[in-house]
Image (cartoon, rainbow, N blue to C red):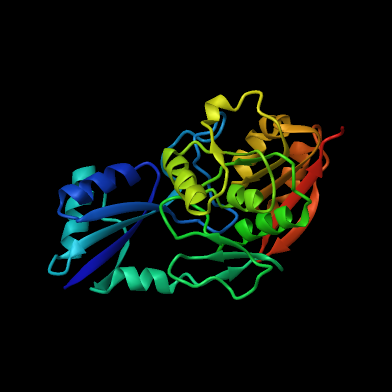
Length: 297
């Protein structure tokens, strides 16, 4: 069996309405993606206080999955008419039936992050290295599998610290990978937080699978929480909005790391944090940077 994937480009004014209309017109599923993802115009939607409140991006890629025998152009035209707009430009491609589990697993091999840190999916054997610190992690609904440069940068930063006996807060934890790494590197206590309920589920499950002591706490219960090490792998806009909160979570003499920042956005993040903490680049990878700084004791 084959399916058809119809990809429409539209602005935020019609993205949600078009998605609903495509479902009503016969689409099997519809997803909305940021058409500017990975570039300077990428827009974060996290729901943090003060961040953008819209639920879609400025430019959207609306992806509709259709039955293989469907007339994609007719489905798009019907949906557009229901929204009162002209049919948007769209591309179509056939999607063949595959062993989706094997196809997905084939994309994720063990990742050596640093001299001792490894991210290993459960369907792979651990590296034959007694010095290896292995994090067992499968791809899931929550962000963070170690494959993205921003995650690797934070993991390397954590591995560069002497974490034994120090507390850690992973803010915007996604899959919990950074919190789990910190726990495996000797940190305690380790706490993680995120506004996405799915992140809480993923973090708890992944921590249990790794036999790591990680406590997930809701964002609205983080007031007053301080840690010797705070790490936030989010994106530039929410990082700027959260500057007072994130610095406020760092205990006196503690350290902060921020990632999810494109190289060209580095200066604006440093400027946003300048009244609170001096930040400097820890490392750069594939156009993404990780910034770090220390709070005075």
